[in-house]
Amino acid sequence: MFLEIIEWFDETGKELVHRIPEEGSGDIKYGAQLIVRESQAGIFFYRGKAVGAFGPGSHTLKTGNIPLLTKIVSLPWGAKSPLRAEVYFVNLKTFTNLKWGTRDPVAFKDSELGLIRLRAFGVFNLRVYQPVLFINNLVGTQGIFSTEEIEDYLNQVIVSRFNDYMGETIDSILNLPAKYDELSDGLSERLTQDFQRFGLDLQGLYINAVTPPPEVQKAIDDRSRMGVFDDMNKLMQMKAAMAMEKASESEGESAMGTGMGVMMPAMFAQYFSGKEQGQGQGPPAADRPAPTGETGPACQECGNSIPGDAKFCHQCGHQQVVFNKCGNCGKNLTPTAKFCPRCGQSATEKPAPRLCPGCGAENLTDSKFCNQCGEKIGA
Image 1 (cartoon, rainbow, N blue to C red):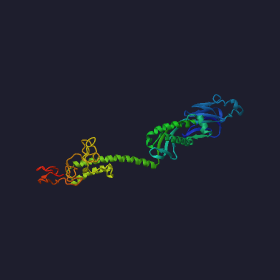
Image 2 (image 1 turned 135 degrees about the vertical axis):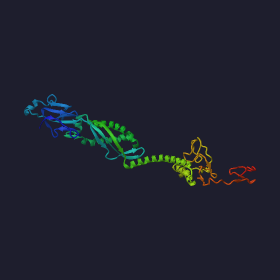
Image 3 (image 1 turned 120 degrees about the horizontal axis):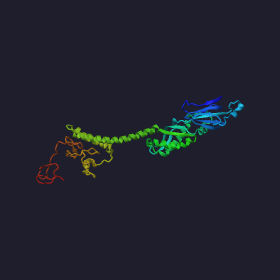
Image 4 (image 1 turned 90 degrees about the vertical axis):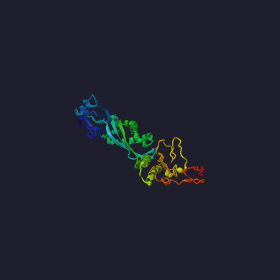
């Protein structure tokens, strides 16, 4: 076969190198036309060596560019070329969307989650920038060399470098989403020398995802829920205080309904702050001295400091505006309360007057001396 017009078109979009002829070598005729496209390079091989490289354009193969092609050499063969050679067309375009990823999970020591296994996935772009080096180191004598034949090997190189680089730069996968770009740039720089060894240029590498196994993902979800529960506790405390304020403003409710409206928010507040488990629980309010507060007014119920204009305690929900007090235990009562929510004492019945031990006159329950004779009443 005499080759007079030598050219090649990549119909698949995946061929890196294509040799003409694909099998064996061919007879190159003196004056044959070699056509090279803008995205290609033509490498002329004779007797196993690269003897010429051609860029884009149409080239006439003769003594001027290939010294071996001479009429003198071809005379003994009836002006037919005895030269048997091959032309390798190298595709210089950028091959995009090549996949890389871990086949098996890799071990990673997380500073917060401990030893876990991760999978990583992404894409990379590739381009041949030294055609002769690429042919000699990877292609050899293959007639067709595509991305499918090199993608698997490059994937293993990328994964190997990724494992080392991630272990050096990332302490926890919880911080990983904010460092994808940093990881991609650093990994690309580390892989540059590995690719250049074969005459390849890594045009870009991107990390799509780094995922732990399902059980680790569940642990991360559970940790996120705990943070939501903490915020929910604060929300419930606020709603409890608002509900108690609304109950104190309503009128015409039954004594039991009013009492429960005051007591329930405080019970919820104590529950969410851990007081029902015995945490920070002190003696009953009736047995404690009146609170003073170190930085301002203090709640009469729990003793915590509160703002001076507060109507309710932000810790326990206790009402601070005093309308009436229980004559038995001193608990603050709402204007419509008929019974004390703490001890059950009737709020409408007045306690029996105190009698003076000297003259027998009736006195108020909180009197310390008789208003008739001046005798001291009680201890």
